[in-house]
Image 1 (tube, rainbow, N blue to C red):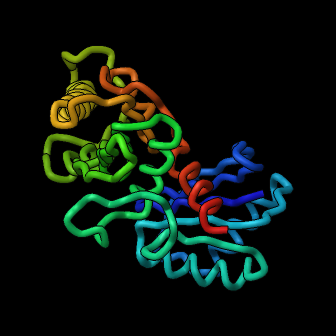
Image 2 (cartoon, rainbow, N blue to C red):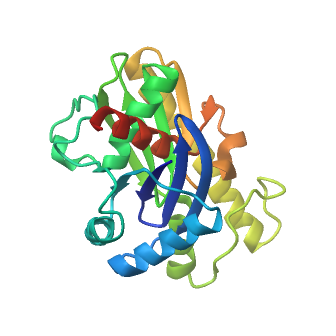
Length: 252
C-alpha cells in the first residue's frame, strides 16, 4: 500500500491507499521538534496497529523543521521503498500562474491537482486549518493564487489571550446567533463570522472567475462550519492525501 503523509502546522494526517482506494487514515498532532527517530517510531506504531504493509511513500510538509526530520526518517526507516516528497522539481502537472511560484506551499499544489482531477475547474478549495486557505484553480487546472485568513482555533486563542474579560472556549456552533452569556457570545461571533467570511470571499472570487464548478471544503476544522457556509458545494477531508497519491503516480 502507498503511505501518504501531510505534515501541517497543527496536525499531521496520514493515509494508506490500495490503488485509488483510501484504506486507513490517522490524524495526530504536529510537533516540529520531533526527531527523525521519533517520527519513524510513531509512524511504524500506527501502521503496525492495522497490520499495514507499505510499498511506497508520498509526503509534503509546510513546516521546514518537520520536513528535515521527515527526509531523514524516510532515508533511515524506509530506504528500500520508493518515495516522493512534493517540492520544486517534482512533476505535479500543476501550472503555477502566480508572481513567485517558490512561495506556494506543497499542500496547495496537491490540493489543486486533486480538486481539478475530481471536480474540474474553475474551482476553489477552502482549507480549514491553522489558517483558512482559499486556493483558486482555473478551468485548465492552473493554480491562480488565493487568499489567507486566520484559522478558527487561532482566532479563539487570540481573543482569550488579548481580552482580559474573555477566556478560551470550545469552538462549536452556539444555540443562537444572539449569545446569552460570554461563552455563547464568543461562539456566535466566531462561528457565524467565519461562515460569513468564507461565503463573502468565495462570492468575490466567483465574480472574478465568472463561474465556479465546485467549492470544496477540506481541513480538520471544515466540519465545524460546513453546514453554515452556503457557498460550499463539496466536502473532501482527504483532498491533500488524494493529491499526494496522484503526484506519486506521476513520478514513479
